[in-house]
Length: 548
Image 1 (cartoon, rainbow, N blue to C red):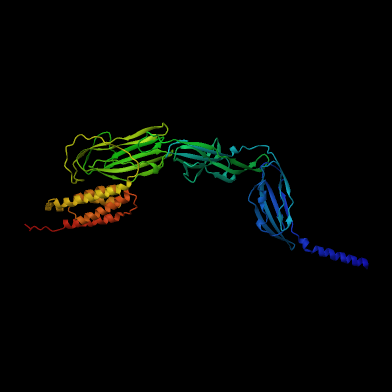
Image 2: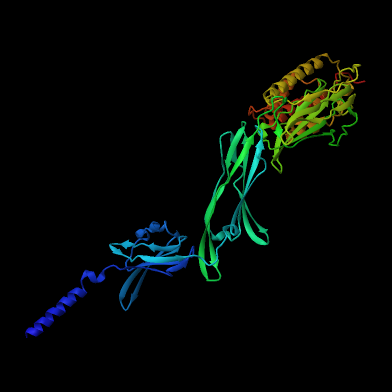
């Protein structure tokens, strides 16, 4: 009986232990795919627990000192077998170490339960990989000796001789330079594929502009790179993470001082090209080597191109040409475009209209510049164009000043000066049009009354050309045909002429000044049509003479 009581008590104790909370204690286990690896060889770490936990229950940052880490993957699963429900939470992470010897994966703790530390033996890889065979950083500076205002281009090529998808955490650190040189990125970078020594490669290209401000010797810290590449070892079937770190190199940039004996606008550059072309009113090229025969009122187009290597648009000189008073000149705003090899092109277009008969010379241009390669001052030259202006034809008839016997014309050459005269151009055009208005008004009052037959004369094609130019907002052609049309109709009322002149003045200000004035071509068209309508009424007015 006593023995039976002891057995019963023992059974109760065991049953109580079986159903105690300790029997459901949380378990946490860590394991690796291998514990002996080559340097930078990738292996897997897995941590499993039999409880639902959050993904951030483990902090893997403790591995940063000894291992390269991938992003951990995490998942929770629930299964039921024969009515028994189990929960499983699991982390998987790829690791690699670049330290030789024994490195340890420390213990991880979840809700008071800890994993066992794991020792990893890291041995030297049997075949060493040259990182330059995987990633290469090339830097080129096209000019390391500059003058103030001159610029150079730094071109960076990051060459990846492997699939870009195998890159991990790539970072390009931009160059740095001392004060005295401006450094700016020219674009956001471009990427393309190429073949180098028979090997496919991906290239990332960046360009930076270096602009010198003041003389001195400066240190340029070049770009650098850091990242890693996942590499498969076909011999062992393993995977390695190859760290790639390319340190920055230092470059010396020398900025020379402006020569004391230099004169003219300061244009330092290794290469400068100044060219021009002449065209008649029909767009046909004019031979500048011979005297050009033209007529009063016929337009001549002059296009000047200035190509400067290593100079930004805002540092370009302004081309100002002092034309004779007998020439009316219309100038468009300079246009800039970027060419190859760090060259910028400025294009200046002008329309020139002779106002009087006789021999006229359109001035040439002398432009001083500093050849930074040869270290000497040079002068670019454009030849003048000599004109022989005859009386106006019927198409462009206009009041012509009498021809005056003058001595043989002297070729006048202008020298380009520093920028800063655009604000005065608006005032010049406004003054010209006010003078034209006064002249047209007085001419209209003094001109003898035309014969009755002239009232029925067909209107010239000037009106159609003027309307077409207005619709296309062609400022130069509007100037030309509007002047011709006003000259053909001096009988226009002064208030209508003043309204047209006001629109022309607004047009000139919007086109040739930086005042930001807005001009709409429809306002000028409305003013012109209003004036044109009065001409139509005059042609329809009945004759005051009695019928014969």
